[in-house]
Amino acid sequence: MNRLEKLYKITKQLKIVVSQQITAENREQVIQTINQLVEQRGMYMKEIVPPYTEAEKAMGEELIIINKQIQDQLDKLFEGLKKEMRQIKKQKKSNQSYINPYKKVQTMDGMFLDQKK
Image (cartoon, rainbow, N blue to C red; front, side, top):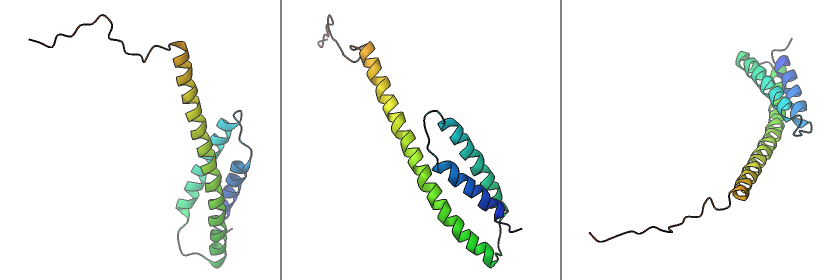
């Protein structure tokens, strides 16, 4: 069995997972699956050392292409998460200003400052 077969299978699984539609309901489960697959893939990558056969080189080139596709999908997922977090933070701030609209208003009423000594 080729040394890269396990790595190739896990990479294909990872590509399938990141390619699926990610919704608010399944996001946590998908992220956990992605983390598990990335950890397994990292362990197999540590085991792969030169010299490489021609078949392994060809498979490695294919893995590089698949890895770029996975990285693009993960970047899109990350950007979506960041956008959603900014939106939630903005909504939270808006809710706070609705609850207490005078929180940021500074008043100096009834205060006298004597500047002479």
